Image (tube, rainbow, N blue to C red):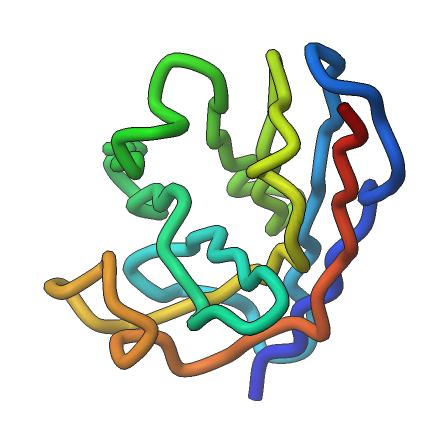
Length: 124
């Protein structure tokens, strides 16, 4: 079993930055990928970014790819999301996910483990 814990959320003005971190504990994570998703009120959880654990290959949702950067630290079992130039539409609860699956990383269905989420609020 893998436990995921997110941190780093908060309130920021539009144009500002936040850095989210996700720490994996329990069974050593030897899986394929970790990712960030987000869920705004009344909306479905949506893909933000993913990183393959060994190769470091990254994937981004189009609306964030020039503003957000996902990175992982294999030794610390952590994955971070640096968010710059934040917009009010980025407001959501951000969730970290982990998976052993190779494909479908943009879908919530691919993920075996989830954290409890961290709130990000961007004011205009």
